[in-house]
Length: 163
Image (cartoon, rainbow, N blue to C red; front, side, top):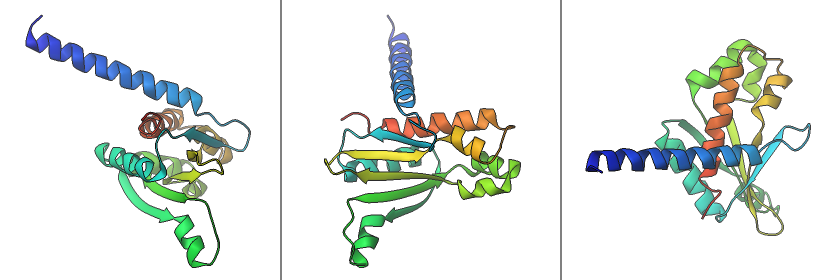
C-alpha cells in the first residue's frame, strides 16, 4: 500500500468513525416526550464539556454568540443553583431560513444549548428538538434545513459523549 492510499484509508476510516458516533448520539438524543427536550449525557465534567463544545463550534465556523453562567447569576442573587450554563450559537445562513418561513421562529433561533449538572453530578447537554420547533411554528417548507440543524447539534454534542 502506498503512503497516499494509506492516508486516504486513514481519512476514510476516521470519517466513518465520526459518522457512526454522530449517528449514535443523534439516535440516542431524541426528545423523550412531547415537550421537545433532547438530552445527551456527558462523559466529561462541566468545564471540559463547555470547552469541547465551544471548540467544536469554532472549528465548524459556526457563530458563537454568548455563554451565560446561570449558576453564577443565581449566586449573585443569593440563590443556590447546580452548575448550569447556556451556550447560544448558530449559523445565520441556516437559522434565518426558519425565521423567513415563520418570523415567530426567532423565539427559538439561534440555537440554545444548556449544559447542566444533576443531583448525581452527571452533566447533560440539553436543547430543543428541531422537529418540535418545526411543529411549534408550523414550518413545513424547511425539512432539509431542520435535518441539517439536527445533524450539526448531534455532531457538536458528540464531542462530550466520550472521554
